[in-house]
Image (tube, rainbow over all chains, first blue to last red; front, top):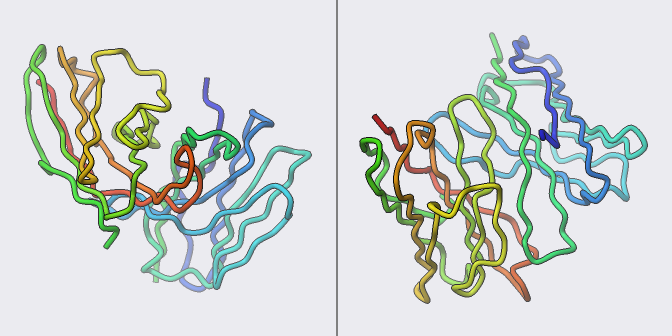
Length: 114
Length: 116
């Protein structure tokens, strides 16, 4: 059972444009929603994260929008740059327990073209 | 640099063999977890160790086992390798309080296993 669904699978955006990646979750017990960035040959790195008590979190050019009633959250990358070209994963976990396993989406390969 | 190093970076095994993958975490990171990332997929949680004891497991069979050592190193062992075990295996660690909660998860660059 895929608990976190991510779309699109791939995305091409022009330099300076806005990149938008969407995720939907099923388990209402999830209370932590991070986004990870992964470059080829590297492990995932935490980009930004949000808890369900806020609807938006912004860090520099990266913004998470969160809709608790719809069980959806999205990543917006403003002024997208070629260096943002990577694979992005949304994830979710339940932080109330000691075992904080992350459930990942299937990933979005983002390509920023000049 | 995440401070998490994994070895080997690449290895090839044949079906039925056994493999041991190693991970070294930052000092003070007493929670370590392992993930399997198949090609084109997101990482999947295998298990987590906190202070040398397994405290969580994903949907993986018992032939996947692990160890965590007091020196912040850990191992993932896979017995009776199957073709579907071919994947990138990621180690991740975090500084943990009680039960391993809290703190950012830092991933290593992974060990790419190919099973022929």
